Amino acid sequence: MSADTGWSAAPDPVLLVAADRTLPLPRPGTPRRPRPRPGRPAPPGRAPLGRELRHAGKVFAAETLKQHRRLFGQPLVIASMLVWPLLQLAATYYTLHPIAAGSAAAARWPLAADPGRLLGFLATGALAWAFFFSLVQSASHFTYERMTGTLELLFLSPANRLVLMLANGAGALLQNAWLLTCFLGATAAGFGTLDVAGPWMYPVVLLALLVPAVAWGALLNSLMVFSRDSMFLYTVLDDPMWFVGGVRLPAFALPGVLRLLGAALPLTGSLTVVRGALLEGEGLAALAPGLAWLAALSALLLAGAALALRVGEARAQRTGSLSLA
Image (cartoon, rainbow, N blue to C red):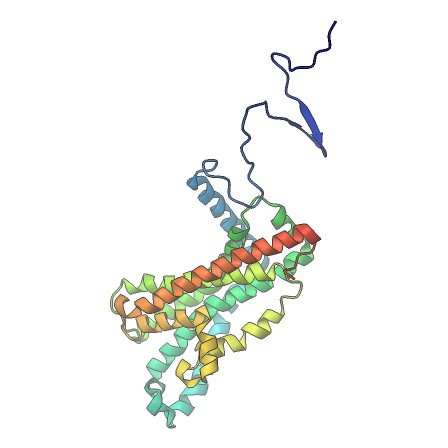
């Protein structure tokens, strides 16, 4: 008898035992399709766009519900979301108006002498501040994710990393800013301080606030998820951000260096568009440069968020440490 040195006519799949699972090897001549890695989109043709969108929607809903249960579950918290910003707005108004109206500042800043216009200026600043600073708070909450151990679960889940960061920020934005937005909108309409070119400008204002804020939140979340101490974010992005962003003071009153720093913040660009659309009656043609700058800045922020996630996750896989450096 001679030894059998070839394949049989109809061989069974050869089994490869790797780690704790048994995987069949592909038959000779059968191309292997790449398997999608956790947290990354599937190759073209594997998952339709509708399925990807449904998956992203589930991630957004889950993150929003988680934040609501942990941070916004009590009626007292809901009330504070309106009371605290209004107290800050009143304190700023009654600090600026008596000084600006009775000094030479009114010659350079005419609206300071008009109580209605000054209140509109400060109210739009408070609204934009609520949008952007709620995302600073959202990013700082990744400290609790580390302490409770849910951060590891987020990275073990099959959800896309960037979608998780966007969902975390959008959930905080939705629950922090909606009440103040409704109240200030109704108040401004009631006092007649709005000067709007047309009703089509309201969606433009909302997008000018929403899109840059979500992109800003994605970048902050992507950076803070790899930081053990995120509380320093309050020190860096609380008072300095509203000061250079033109929230309570006009940008022309700041030194040139601070104006340059403020121009790099999406908050400043959003305020320029919002105030131009709601208080100055400017249309799309006048606001086009500001909107184009906001779109470019939002794209840069999202690209920075994706890069930070990729670098941080690669380092975590290599060193076992959740940090960027």
